[in-house]
Length: 217
Image (cartoon, rainbow, N blue to C red):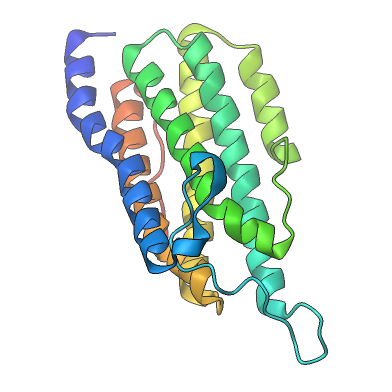
């Protein structure tokens, strides 16, 4: 890769490195609001106050808000799992410095995002999946068989697809969720995901990979 591309990426990537910190700061404010919600083992709690987990309908069963929120969290976990596993592959197989740096940041960001959502997931009885959804498994298998520029191009495109889906999920949740804590989490982390996607676009451009602008509105 040309030196100019590395220099260009580092200036953009410096902003991306701050994104995980943004998520941690948001989570820290939630702990300050509710000291009892600290997550064991040093895990970051999610943005919001986490006070909704025991909501039930008048009949004593879980309400529709909880079902919708649980589905959202499960989808986020599966998407994060895919992005983490694809990025771990990139750390092993990518040859360009900017792709390696980007993949490392994606592992960190999506791991932290999962950690923030885990307290709410526990309240709603959502188990964190060990594997991504089936559609991502096929992409992972494809990436396993590639190397060099072919791998990097496929990785960046696959990450673009996964991130666009993630942004749409968070945007919808921020608008439609009637669960205050889940809505707050979506509003807080949605912009973080969009900034990550802007970093991805810069890396993809440096490698002549066309990725679409995320449509969230």
